[in-house]
Amino acid sequence: MKSTTERKREHLEICLHEPVEMERPTGFEHYRFLHEALPEIAPEDVDIRTAFLGRELAMPFIISSMTGGAARGLEINRHLAAAANALGIPMAVGSQRAALRHPEARQSFGVVREVAPDVPVYANLGAAQLNRGYGLAELRQVIGMIDADGLFLHLNPLQEAIQEGGNTDYRNLAVRIGEVARGLGRPVLAKEVGAGISPRTARLLSDSGVAAIDVSGAGGTSWSKIEALRAEEPARRQLGLRFAEWGIPTAQSLVLCRAELPGMPLIASGGIRDGITAAKALALGADLVGLALPLLSAADVSQEAVEDVLLRFARELRLAMFLVGARDLGELRRGQHLVAELS
Picture 1 (cartoon, one colour):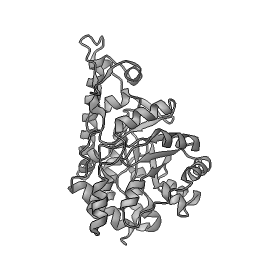
Picture 2 (cartoon, helix red, strand yellow):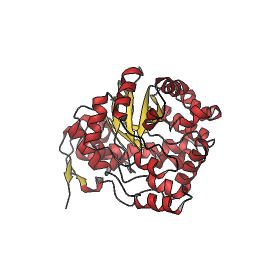
Picture 3 (spheres, rainbow, N blue to C red):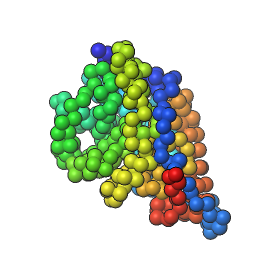
Picture 4 (tube, helix red, strand yellow):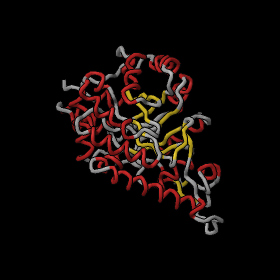
């Protein structure tokens, strides 16, 4: 079996160079904004500042988890983190499991806090590792590695089931997540990796004490497809491709989770590729919008390239808000600005 570092390197190369997105849509295409010909505001009145877990942010975006310890990830993380700091938004790193096993991989994570001292930074580890002997000691290591403001525990049962040697023991995991949430001393957040969060899972996570949930729905990157592209066994590749479109579409997951948990901070990610779709996600109840794949190629180039993508999203979000007459994100969420087109 390949090492964790080698696997992460392959993940990165595949995401950069192969078609890894789902063919199915995110569900946001079923919603349309009601255009207001008399918005009663000017574009300069639109304010997209927000707060998340007690921190003020300049924009309602978060750079979602991507790289996980591969050597190439150092410069990618540097560019992502520097852009996050310059624009006043948070960043979550990729899985730090490789850095726990291979100290040489820690540099690609440590650089994040070096260049992003002013914004929230979140650590990341697979929740299934809690059934593999990992506990508070290991989680505090990943927190300390980047002086993180909190920890994402990612849930990826589909990916693990396709991956050779994947961790598929999810028994009693909600209990262990609860133990971590109570004992870590930093906010614990939970996220899927592209198959969505159901209302049942959202309730389990809420009852376990997580501080926020990233629904990370279907319609964007397919980790089943990525593992299929990595697979050496034909049967495993076939299985990965069979489940490449599996999951709850992002919009549906968001709406269901918001209805189940009206007060829970929610992040919408999974296939959001422009600021208009981001505006729809925010109008449907998301607190933040997570971006990963749209930033990856830019991050392989420079900090400025990452900033260009994020600023494009911000311009499109602001214009959408102006055209529906929403001065701020509160008005965008409270107003009846979206029409569902479900036929």
